[in-house]
Image (cartoon, rainbow, N blue to C red; front, top):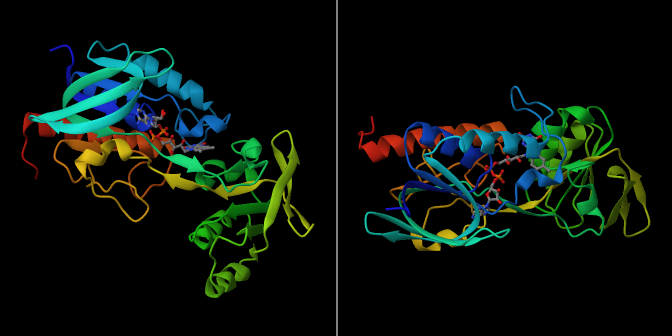
Length: 307
Ligand SMILES: Cc1cc2nc3c(=O)[nH]c(=O)nc-3n(C[C@H](O)[C@H](O)[C@H](O)COP(=O)(O)OP(=O)(O)OC[C@H]3O[C@@H](n4cnc5c(N)ncnc54)[C@H](O)[C@@H]3O)c2cc1C
């Protein structure tokens, strides 16, 4: 059956590509459908992936796609998965083609979700221009280059204090900007103050700087607070509407809950990478989770009982 696969993988980031490579090598017929909007497209350099520290994100993807497509068992197509529904013993998958690629309607015994996260940055006029150049979201990935500099953490969520404590590992010279929206309790502020971290609750006008280099955070009352880059806490959305028919269990942030091997709450549906709880959100973690989920998919398709 040409349009039936052992596994359909939604998303060709490190999680999906790593899962696909391992499944192809397990002689599974695998189709990877990818909307071609990688989360880290905003940045020029990625860190922390062994043998590839400092590589451009598009180069890492290119290498992984090239490796995968050498296997006749694997097919990679640009298409956005629109719906996954139970069908017979498996699933029916519908995808809309992107960049001139055709739409697909296929079936599969298993589905692996690796569609990452969509990000919404605080609504400041210039913030997008600095994102991935002078403002980052992953401190494990980009903290090292900002060691001991005066930094900003800009966010409107309730987890800013924990993120600030983490960033302080790289620089105590840190100001947390809540834009009057993000929540930092008085008790959290005291703990941060002990480490030299300041909390600024006034409303933000914009981020200032040139050519991607951030030099200040400007407040609506005219105050300008100098910084040399920093971090932003975007709002993350796993954008899992296309899985609505599967009624999968998620956590309080809307991320998929899985067991240690990537099995979701629905039999035959697996997940890996940033769309699963709880992180950390890193390339090598996503790739590792993809490989681990691939092993579980293969074992479950064979019917090996779980220990
Ligand atoms: C600015 C920035 C810098 C970063 N720097 C680093 C770094 O230096 N080092 C590091 O380790 N990590 C870094 N990260 C984090 C890293 O990018 C992520 O942790 C990693 O990409 C997650 O991999 P993933 O496979 O889960 O998702 P992604 O890489 O986001 O891949 C998901 C893929 O699924 C596709 N997709 C989405 N919806 C659908 C759909 N419905 N159908 C089909 N396809 C779909 C997307 O287009 C995308 O191609 C950075 C992130 C950002 C935002």
